Length: 309
Image 1: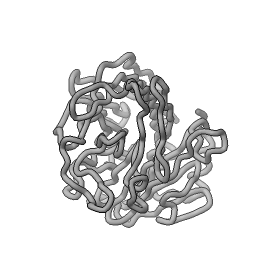
Image 2: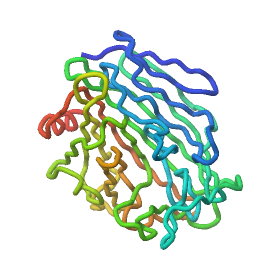
Image 3: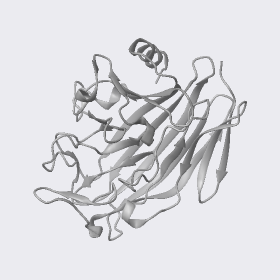
Image 4: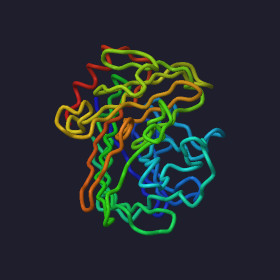
């Protein structure tokens, strides 16, 4: 059963998508610029289940630059488009504001809604601290497959990032710069504080050992504060992403933590840098399934398999 969706655009601020029947705001996509130290960039927060439970964290006291669900670049040719302190091998995390860049909203090419889905396509520009243009991004986000029977809905995020420099862009992570098990970069989800010590599932594995491993999808279940029950988020690679490297693309690996906080990123530069030549475009597409309840592996696999790309 598919519910109608409503879309409200507060120009210069955010887009909000609401399930019309229940009045629950499923997501808010915020594109206004925020604090320079936090590497300003658009993000989704709050992200909610159909029952209205929030499943993202925003500016937690341990990492103020963690904001819901957002596209990031922790190490980009010496710049930090992640936010906060920068990792330097042998010295740890240092306050280096001259490295902190931004991803700026440049406009929407599409903002549309019908009974079954909402879509918006955005143009963004990526900048180092000095303000030069390093990359253009075309981003498309779709909300779809809202299902009251299963208590779930889906979000598909597509990004195409084109190098506008005269030299290669080098996408890396703290791990490519010497810190073990810290390969975060790319699309990044920060869970609410209550989701600490949640359950991590993959098709053939379970638990934090999935750090740095490959799999077509990874799920995280957490238990809410304030209200009873759990929620499950499933992060899925589009088949063309090359998550296993089998099609010759740069392989992706999962960054995932359940302690000291809940976080997931399908990192595109975990163990090795990804080098993007001048004029070349990096294209990635992901799906996030947001569900009420603590789903088991069979239910997750069935849901993932039922949604076509």
